[in-house]
Length: 232
Ligand SMILES: CC(C)CC(=O)Nc1cccc(-c2cccc(CN)c2)c1
Image (cartoon, rainbow, N blue to C red; front, side, top):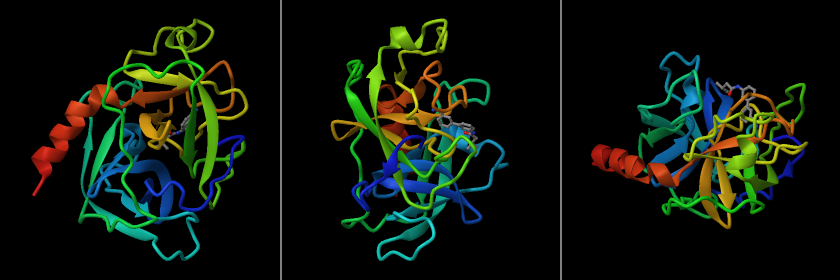
């Protein structure tokens, strides 16, 4: 997160850190007791290695009472996701067991009504992604508020030039922005997860490249289907 600030500890009890060999790679969030939603592009370069999921954390390194690392039973990328574009950039992770829910570990509801969030709506992104252009990584969860911008503006030829589909949304990226390592985290508007951070042009903090999110509502049926088929 560029231009943000340290989150109030455990005010975002749905936040997950997807880790490989103890290293934070991407964000994610708890959508059900045994399921975390993240971004498919986070699996790039992991050659099929399964993540471990850290829940209940504020600091990535310090011992905290409700912090717990969960093994993953299955990782399901959306069938339409690929490394060449940001389309269908969703990843479902089934935890080895149901997460123990408490004040520090909670499910975040996601938007099921497929209607665009109005431009200028202030939403929040949080994550343990890089906090400087030189790539400094924070130990504690960061957050930033960003206004939604219209798909029309985001698709302008000087911005993302007609690559933003109706299954994506954008926020202004002037100075304050999501960045490397924030992918997979939720964009929360009025307390509901409306989007999942995607890397887009992999540029951060440049107003010419607004932040891009995969809208969740268009994928509600896919998400429910995967969770139902793997249940039990
Ligand atoms: C395996 C993955 C971690 C590789 C990756 O994602 N790299 C990468 C590099 C630079 C910027 C970003 C990035 C992420 C989220 C939002 C944005 C732009 N707001 C950029 C992402």
